[in-house]
Image (cartoon, rainbow, N blue to C red; front, side, top):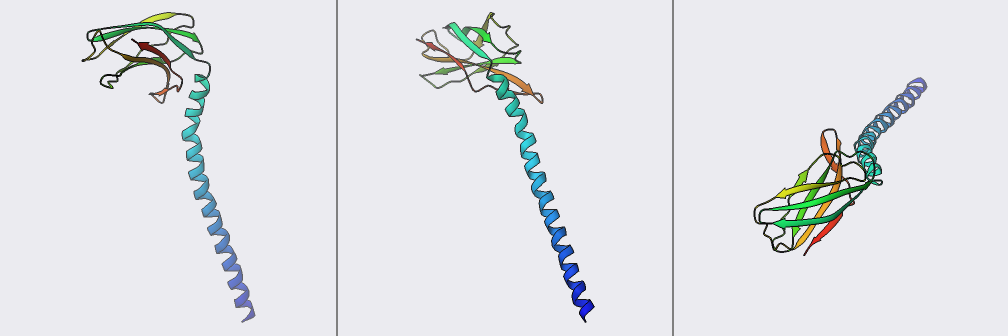
Length: 147
């Protein structure tokens, strides 16, 4: 009898250790997956810190707006996303383009139905980087007020 009770304690201990190892493995898999998914976002946002865009001038005509975008500083970006936010109808349009060299100013044309020459609102510009083929946008934006 004594040897059987001793075996029960050993079997119980082995089962408890195995369950603990399985639980640790599951927790590790979940945490490592979360960390690896967010690593790309952290890398993009660290690149975004150095990127500074400016919209020195923009003009809207019927059906389109033309915005001059200047890249003041930063690494090579995948492109620029421009958006028009109209105070009249909350319309939003975005257009992706190629990198702008530091110090250069390039014109970007945005077309959208419903734009009129009297449009009032904002044009915003945000740099983006491609991560796994999808654009990841910088949080900082340049804004130009359309009067």
